[in-house]
Amino acid sequence: MLTHCGTQTIESENLILRKFSYDDNENMLDYWVSDPKIQFLYSEPIYTTKDEVKILLDKYIGSYIFDDKYRWAIIEKSTGICIGQIAFFLVDSKNHFGEIEYCIGSKFHRKGYASEAVRNVINYGFSKINFHKIQVCHKEKNIASQGVIMKNGFQHEGTLRDYFYIDGAYVSRLYYSMLKSEWEAVK
Image 1: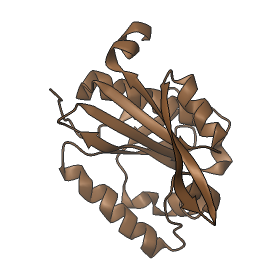
Image 2 (image 1 turned 90 degrees about the vertical axis):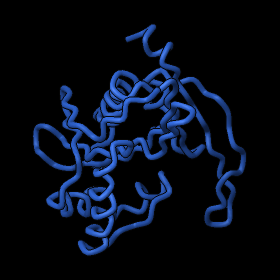
Image 3 (image 1 turned 60 degrees about the vertical axis):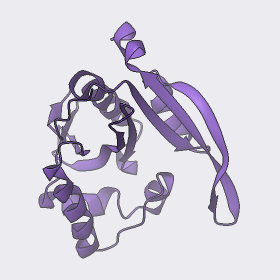
Image 4 (image 1 turned 135 degrees about the horizontal axis):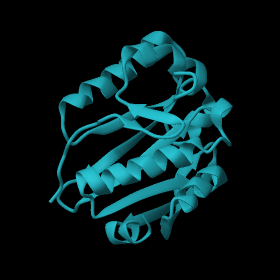
């Protein structure tokens, strides 16, 4: 049985994962939601105005009234900048699993932030929510995301071949998972 507890603040060595606030609007626009490359990697639209980002924030912040919704702003501790987001965007309470999505602004790549955020959300999912399984996926050409996933100990489950049709070409989607027993064995 899952123990839904909502989005709570998580602090780690370099990051603070916390609920979004309307004060994040400018950082989001400056560092990631307006970047076509970043938004493409996790199949999200590009936002170009503060009004568009406010609508997105309305959705994120509005979801916090539900205990089974989990979405964090990724804050770089040293600067206080909102550099991305991470979520259990899919929660299946009947089958006891959650699926992670995440993105980090390009300026903050190759600093280990994505791996650190994913590691903390995995710990939260297993220790607080009591998931049996956590899964994650990436587009086949997103090698950086694959590195984050592998670094965090996920096992490849399979590939959904030609899953997306983007700009005249098919793109596959690779799925990975981790069971709570596997997490417990290495934590």
